[in-house]
Image (cartoon, rainbow, N blue to C red):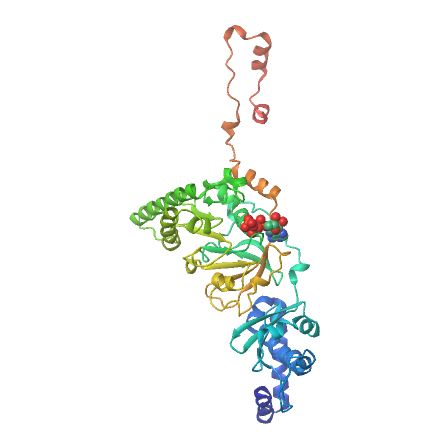
Length: 456
Ligand SMILES: Nc1ncnc2c1ncn2[C@@H]1O[C@H](COP(=O)(O)OP(=O)(O)OP(=O)(O)O)[C@@H](O)[C@H]1O
């Protein structure tokens, strides 16, 4: 209505030609933007335009008819009919969210009962209902599933130290088909929440793979706590700086991590260095905790009581001295992760409960489209990412890292390039009495080219 009034006024005020030309320029500019950079176009303009268009052309237009046929129109004793009202439509790349005010006496269950019918009518892949507040629900319709057909190739191992950008470690693809990267410089610490089998392993190994040349060069050191007996990370113990496979050894590792970074903080402070750069002298120390709850909740009280403040310290004090924490958890409630807010990068893979989504990503993010509890089990590795300072969650899938890829990674990181002198075989101790004529001949004919020796 408002847009019609504004358009009418513009035509009267400026004339048809001016309004048509302005509209033409806007369409061409928008189309070029969309072609050149779809994710940013979608973030700033696409989702608004799509929501406006779909409200007008799809949801609002068919709503009364469909609500009537689905039995959602209520008739009172005087024969008057009341239909639930479409209040607002918002849209992300894959989902539409239709906010509905229910008729008094209706309940969310009335809509749940006819969800399949509504999904069919609106040609959606699936639909869910959420209660937003008393009397208001959101009907969520999934329009597309890009990860059904999108291949997610495992990014190649970076070739050299110089080719690793700690601010852009590519581990998968976004729903728009673009590379998705984690950022250990600006993004600092990462919290990864996901139910069992949701693909946390792929995310963590994907991140480690991208650090491989730096691990091999000693510029990144991994401190890994895998308190579930080393099930996930045992295969990589050789390449880790420190590895713990129980809560007891995990606590010892945590103590050493904090002592090491405290010492570095003091040392760099004395030398007047305010921010360190990752190098063999001052490596980036990445602490990976595969199941935070095993160190904070499902362990003895003494362990949890000591571990939590140490973790809090690691999350708050070591940014400048290159301490980074990557924590994984299945149930992200406060008892398991008391310091959730200290992780600037948050990722929600498939979660068992709707309430876990906001616990992981922050208040209200599920309402903005991060339906991590709706990710099907057949889609491991898919999740929603939320960066501090960015409103919209992004849907992402990590590439799958197989056992063979892990073995190759470990082999790559644990082979130290040998220096030429080290490759020479130790001189054979030969007693003078053992020297034969043939030996003397060989010594005479040796011309200084030691290729055979080197190859040996
Ligand atoms: N990115 C991915 N793409 C495709 N399949 C995947 C991906 N990640 C994981 N999978 C599949 O899902 C299975 C479970 O993944 P994974 O072990 O990483 O889950 P998890 O969240 O670490 O589970 P748990 O908490 O029980 O250790 C894997 O064995 C693999 O078959």
